[in-house]
Amino acid sequence: MSVLESADPAVWESICLEQRRQTDGLELIASENYTSAAVMEAAGTVLTNKYAEGYPGRRYYGGCEHVDAIEDLARRRACSLFDAEHANVQPHAGSQANMAVYLTVLQPGDTILALDLAHGGHLTHGMHLNFSGRLYRAVHYGVRPDDHRIDFDQVAALAREHRPRLIVAGASAYPREIDHAKFADIARDNDALLMVDMAHYAGLVAAGIHNSPVPVADFVTSTSHKTLRGPRSGFVLCRQDRARDLDRTVFPGMQGGPLMHIVAAKAVCFAEAAQPAFREYARQIVENARMLADVLQSGGLQLASGGTDNHLMLCDVTSIGLTGRIAETALDQAGITVNKNMIPFDQRKPLDPSGIRIGTAALTTRGMKADEMKRVGSWILDALQHADDTDHLQRLRQDIADFARCYPVPGIDPVPSQAGQD
Ligand code: PLP
Image 1 (cartoon, rainbow, N blue to C red):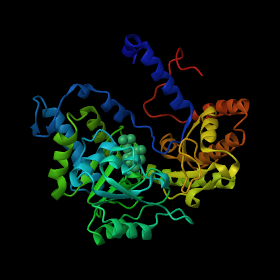
Image 2 (image 1 turned 180 degrees about the horizontal axis):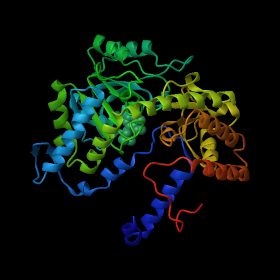
Image 3 (image 1 turned 45 degrees about the vertical axis):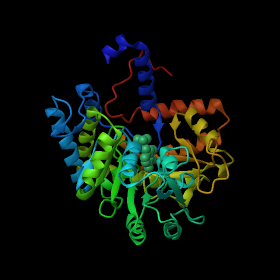
Image 4 (image 1 turned 120 degrees about the horizontal axis):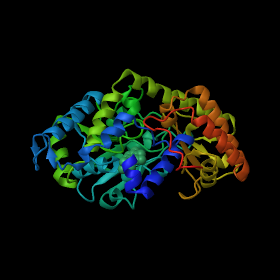
C-alpha cells in the first residue's frame, strides 16, 4: 500500500492500526471473519471503476462483457454451492438482501412474523426504527423461557392469529440449529411465505453442517462476510418462478449499479466455500465453539440455552457480577473483541445488557483448534474476573498479542514498524 501511504497518510495510518488490531487481538465477534487474500484482492481491483446497471447480457452501460462473465460466475457458483435454482448476487449487504425480498412480496402495512430482536433477531426483522418495522406490521415470536429454544408453539399460534404474509426465520444471536422444515410447515399451514435469513450460519449450511433452508424456503437471504468468509455483502436465493420478480426488485427497484468488485469477491468466496477444506473449517468452527462454551461454563458463566450447536454463544455475565458493557470494555482492554448483547428475557437495557455474544469463526480461520480455545476461554475468564484491574488487563493484552501473532491472518503482511505501535 505504498501509494496510499504517500497519497493519504491519515487514512493509511488508521488502516495500519486496524491491521495491527486484527493481528494482535483475539477476534470473537460472532459476525466477523477474516477473508482470504484472494477475496481481498478481488475486492481491491479495477472493477470498482465499472458501472453495470442491469444483469449479465441486459446492461444499461457499455463495456460490460467482463463484468458479465464475473456476475455469471458468481450466480452459478452461489446456485451450485447452495443447490439453489436462482441467485441474485447484487444486494450490497445483508440488510439490502432482506429488503429485496420484502419489496418483492410485501405491500406496505403487510404483516411479517419474525424473531424478536431481544431474543436474537436482526434489526431488519421488523425492529420499530428499521425500515422493516416502519413499512410493515411486525409481529415477533421468541424463545422459550426454560430452554431458550425457538418457541414453535408460539410461532404457530401467532401465525394463526395474525395471518402474516411472510414468516422470517434466521437470527443474529441464536446459538442453536434452526429447524427450517418446522418453519416451512407453519408457513404452509397459514398461507404465508417463508424467508430464511441465514446470514450468520451460511458457512455452516454451505459445508452441510447446518440443515439447508433452500429446499423449504421461498427465499433465502444471507450476508457473505460472516461464517461464509467472503467480502462484506449480501445475496438472495430463490426458485426460478420467483427469479424475475426478485431481480426486478433489486434492480431497478432498490439499487443502481452493483458493486462489481464485491460481486467478484463473492464469486471467489463461493468457490472457496465449495472446497473440502472449507467443510473442515466449518466443522472446526463448531467444535471450537463447543469447547469454548464448556470452558466458559466451567468458569461460572451461564450460557443462553446452556450451550451452542453453531458458531456462537450468548453468555450471561451477570452470573459473575458484571454487565455486558463492563465485560465488553474489560475484554477490549485485554485485546479480546466481543460485543455486548441482550440475552433472552433480559431485564437490562440494550446499551448495557446482561450478556456478551462470542463467536469462533474468525479465530478458526487463523488455524486455532480446541486446545487454543481452552487458552482463549481461560483468558476471557481471567479478564472478566479482573474487569476493574487495568494493570492486569494490560499484562493480559501483552500475553494475548504474543500468542495471537503466532496465528497468521490471511492476506495481512507484518505491519510496518513506523505505524500501528501499541
Ligand atoms: N441478517 C442477519 C441475521 C444479520 O445478523 C445481519 C448482520 O449482522 C444482517 C442481516 C444484515 O447484514 P448487513 O450488516 O450486511 O446489512
